[in-house]
Length: 166
Image 1: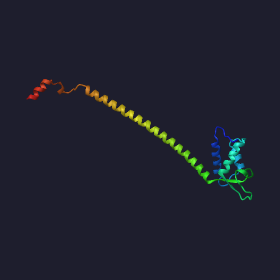
Image 2: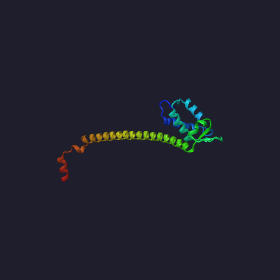
Image 3: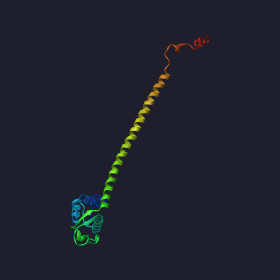
């Protein structure tokens, strides 16, 4: 069985494509792939998983050989385990799409963090502005409530009326 600790089988399939991309120039044999997966702590043992990986390998890679013996796919992969295979173009593009989507997810997380920081900054700025306005209003209220200290405030209202009559 192929299994990496705390990983899914999708991770295994993804790793197979990554290995294929790394070995695009020289190609890779099934046995080389199998041994590399074992070195990376993928365990072997389950025939069903082994068959699924063989099928994934056959679907994802094409046979590169000048052998006279005809390669027909999953039916005779066991006779071609030491032949070189190269990652197919559509699977290489799928791998690139996967990598782009992971990058887009990282960018989206950064954008969310920046937006959150912007919201927090906006809230803080609003609080500061409200506190400033409140202090300004309190100061104005105190100025209005203070009695006037200049001379005209000491003149009696009767005197003001008499002076207007003249």
